[in-house]
Image (cartoon, rainbow, N blue to C red):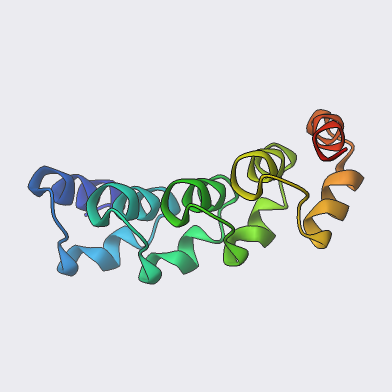
Length: 119
């Protein structure tokens, strides 16, 4: 069974299926979906896998944690797009220093937007 199939089974039932959680944990996207749509809140067991993915770390902070999520910040900082939106929508201000410095050094189009945002 794949993580998608395990998630789909939980989604069909509309509830947690603990025996399938180990399968869901193999994929950051389905771990995020499981937290958001099935658990409808923080899923600490899935955070390790989610925190390794740039996009889903940002989405987890925005939609599940609904605030700063330090565990996901190293992954988020790997991508200027996710870092920019994390600053705008989650932190609502200047990124933590290590993320800020990485963003400035990225020389990406989102760097210019970020600099205008924090001024």
